[in-house]
Figure 1 (cartoon, rainbow over the protein chains, first blue to last red):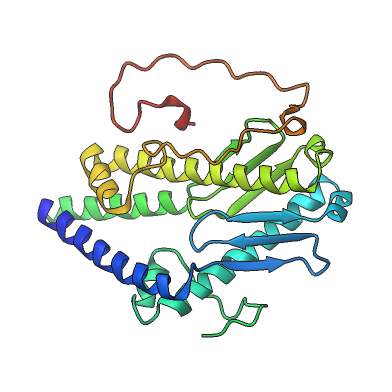
Figure 2: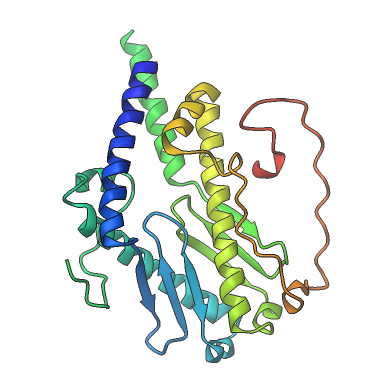
Length: 117
Length: 148
């Protein structure tokens, strides 16, 4: 069992190093989404909580329930965007199936900001 | 032997199903926001107290961001706890050695100390009843606040 754990840890370290080197060159992988009227903007990370949630002053007039629903909708969109970008960024370093197996799904096209591969 | 393997496979599948469905609900320390999140940071439910909106747009963004992080951390910790229960502390510690410390072990706290307007808690909030001391020195269960 210890050998298995050590092997798994070594593999994770190797992948981590490859990913770190790649991300150092390409910059951090994030996803971004906004409401059409700019009420809510979310910057998301792949497989993690949002990095930043911004709300416009005008959005406060939506009331707590509608604003909460809009934040959830935009956060979901931003995270799908981040996951898709992660796949696109790492597909030459990590087997995309392994990312999918980790729960980081690749969307069809969530990018509204003109992703450049 | 075959029956034992079958049992293990079923237990593994059950654990995977349970981990996939795992969520945690956390309220911001100032009582104005409650979030249910998955370990992957997905927001499953979000409740904003009307008093939070009165604190301005920046406060809403900050408090919601912090609460989602807290809820995600709690969900990740709950995953470690469930895994430790099913597989034993030794395996959970092995997983930590690969995947990094559980949120409980790493002391990072995403909550920024509130400025004057943000510390206004709604009047109906009361402090939680302190939980009883747990004499068990189990590595994954000695912080009762994670076990909700």
